[in-house]
Length: 106
Length: 106
Image 1 (cartoon, chains in turn green, yellow):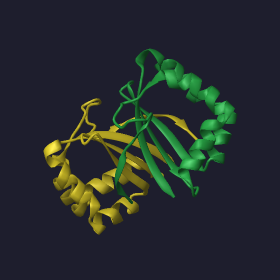
Image 2 (cartoon, chains in turn yellow, green):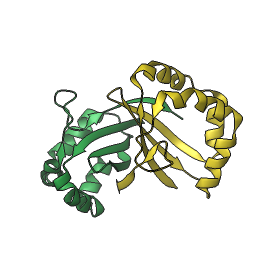
Image 3 (tube, chains in turn blue, green):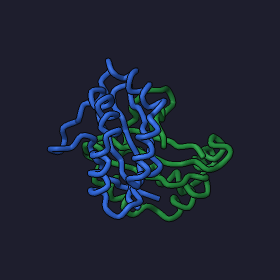
Image 4 (cartoon, chains in turn red, blue):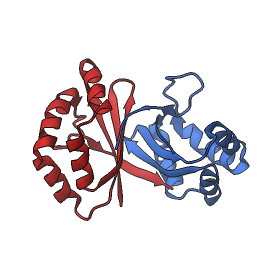
């Protein structure tokens, strides 16, 4: 199992809509997340301006599973709603959510 | 089970020492964390300046367990090392780590 901690900005003017989407996420999207071996996925809001995500990956090929998720039509439809609410931190080229380094676990 | 997402600043000049401490945490401190019903505790580093923590609380009285942890001599000795490495965000009075709101879970 691999643990992930990620961070991204949320646009203040889109925050209410982002919260609304995540209070009632689409069942098709949740099903695909699970199907792609993601478990225990939480998103936390910091200071009405940043999102911190935590999840666990229980599969054997993360890149392949993420590719499969990105190819899913319902997920694409969901991201079309959520992406405009977010703004990448631009720390690493090609990253949307920024992957943080885990420095401790127990 | 309750999930927590927390955030705090880490002082750049103390980062190396903080990482060193958390790469080899004291067994007595880990034991107390578990004894106080904390599970699956991860800390992630963002931008060499902020720490993001995720953990799960599996007990029945979080405040009592945190009080018990704070009274533990070994934990106090650990915090004497870690506290000077950190700086609270000062968002809520009395908070050290800032508790974020969970806006999504699956």
